[in-house]
View 1 (cartoon, helix red, strand yellow):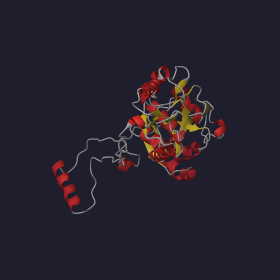
View 2 (view 1 turned 90 degrees about the vertical axis):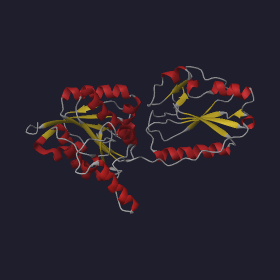
View 3 (view 1 turned 30 degrees about the vertical axis):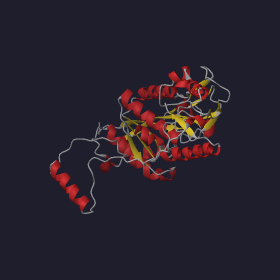
View 4 (view 1 turned 180 degrees about the vertical axis):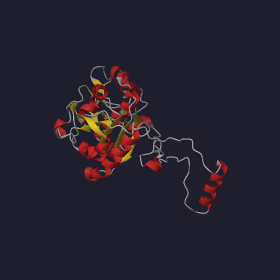
Length: 351
């Protein structure tokens, strides 16, 4: 393969594809027969080693709201071009764009058996969703780093296309995928372990062979001693909204939350509510909204005086693909709002 020019297909969103900004984010798939936007830089980096035979452009809103349909259209176009590798992005910090790039690469690898690579800011929400499935090169948080990113991205893509072996993340520079590959070392495991232990005990730098992610601890609130006099609220990340999704919630990477009234309601009827969520099978919640917002049971507990009263609105957001910092911000806002309303406790339902 290395002595033959490679064929590359490039995926872009509506902005970098030159179609338009947010006003064009609902646009479907468009196909160009030549490099566009960042693709020009990729082609320059590739030189005579190959060419970008097709550019696929899709609106961010369209891809993320109609993911199955958009993915199928993208894969069909890619099959027609018969590329040796697919490149998506770079997406930088753009959440919806990053999710589309991640999904395109994952689908291409799994369904078309063609290598793929993308690039984005390490804190892009797509990284946590896709880094174990695809190669993601790190970028800065904006397109200001485009000139530095494109040569690295194209070189990595070329190596994938020609079947060159890719080494560990720390050597190659991609975002770690959580893989542990067998490799020979001049020292046996026992001696390596003792070397690390000695370094740790003496305060010297060392690197573990089995890194463990440590999450920030969250101290639970003290229990409510008497629920019979408490005001209880329902908080959910299941994405349940009134039918028609009047506030336009996205099915992932959402940064907003809302309260929807359940005052005087005893049940949530099928057909009046719908889940907007890209991370679970929503058919059960669509048929019976109580599986994510248990209003019926809580009204019964309210009638039995087990709880004092139910807060007249439930709080919702879409809990998938959202960066930790954004989740923390929304959580603090929701807690402040419920505190001001003298809510005693919240029942948190997920999906």
